[in-house]
Image (cartoon, rainbow, N blue to C red; front, side):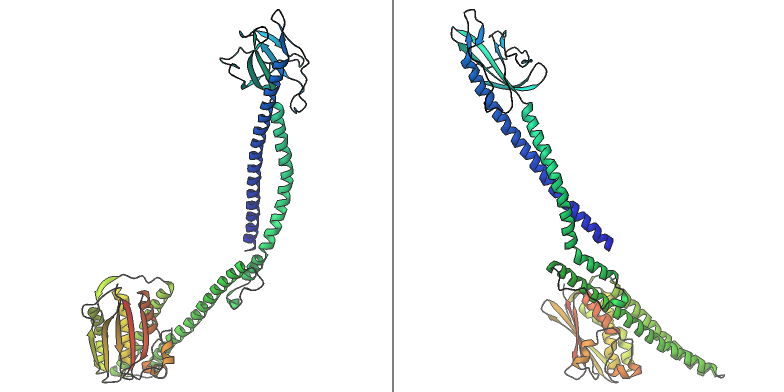
Length: 467
């Protein structure tokens, strides 16, 4: 857990730095593009102004040779050049004059079609040594009818160099800022995750013996308090599940131990002396009854395990309600006949439900078996079905002693028995029949309740949706 939290700290810090770095790079690239555009625009404006200045100082002599009547000095506000590169060409392309103080001139290029005819022409070019320049050209007719093409150029290298210098200086300074941001992000992340570290350390110390411990929900941020409450809720459910498991194990052991002990006693008594065949049959019959009880209990425990594990899937079919009730009553009919009890079934005609017949049949049999077991000799059991809104209600009413409201509330729990079954061994079972019935009914989206009937017995109502 501690390693996981540490990795989370690293990931959060790296994510923060990644976002900051991406933002910085976007800022630097965007600013560099804007700066380059603005500086080139300023350079373009300067070269056009200088071209106009050149036009004002060029004079042709009587032989048609141009010369400058005033010294062309560098512009005071220019930050990119120390002097100018310019050429004066004849309309035919012949070079008439070149500024040669800088030791290198413009690349010899014949005039392009329409170059400088209708105003200033701007384009990228280069010097003789390959230095890139911004070139401005214009055709001008001077005094005496002399026509010439004037070309003025400024190197673009200083502009690019200034942008590069700014980018390098900015990245260097931002690199230091990112280092500081990394340290700050790590510290902030460490402080933010400190409560989670404490929770993780406490959780690592928990075991089945410490399920009563809970994470603190006070003194932490609301988000972490919510996480603690969710985890505490999980611990509550786990603790209840462990308690149910312990109780299940104890009760199951007790339920299995009783018939096994009875079998052992019957067997030992049967072996104490020689007996007649009829007596041995009685001994074996008694042992077989205990075996049957163990078998039923084992089947019930298996059903219980499947329900708890969520492995009991429903195989739904459309079934008529009268048929469902008749099949369940047929199972307990023999037991009811032995006790001279009458079982009547009414209602349900025309009603159908979509259920798993096997699962719901088991639930009804469990309820009917309890009704037969707790009803007296010559008693009566009434089974009815009736529509109730968008569902159907199945009611099983016995004529037994009934149960109180307090007892009824817990009879659907595991291993719970009340009333006569709690004190009368012949009526005692495993205490799982109603629990399994409730699980089956709720799996179908229904509800099962137990109340005291008007006649004094108990009434179990099962409500199922029609669809």
